Image (cartoon, rainbow, N blue to C red; front, side, top):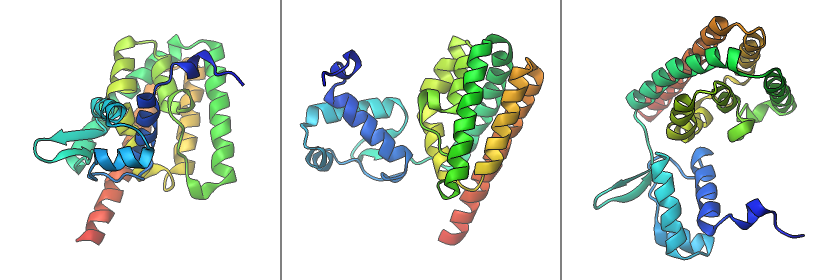
Length: 227
């Protein structure tokens, strides 16, 4: 079968970027772990050039950090840094939900409701795997931000912070808050469907605060065990 135009334009660096990104977000590559170019080049059977390009893109996504005389490592945020991200998300995603309530078309809202229906089937069919959404259009939060139709919000939340948010959502919230998070998502969509921007913002902010509290609790539990 012939490759599609999209597949034709996917480079080795694109594939390696997507693979390492997935391994970081899903925890295969642990926070703080060293990114060894020689080891990864051997493991993936590629030259160092495409690998360096992929690592540079991961650095631009804030998933990898480089330090002089240390090299590249998977990002590892402190509790304080993570808290800052949640505060930004609460304000900006709340605004995005408010805007989406008037900016999204009826068809877009119907698609969003259908996405949540698929998420509910996922959670109910296998609760042990929690509620981890695939990226992009299969991600509820991503879809809401896109639905705001505000280019600045989209740049901040779907590019600058997006992969970091996915990383820590996966670490701290996919199982312990799965059912509750899904219900909260459904309430947000109901408010958007009612074209009630004020309620949509209120519900989104409450949802992210609850997620933040869960993350902080999980961090405290880990630190207690480690201490």
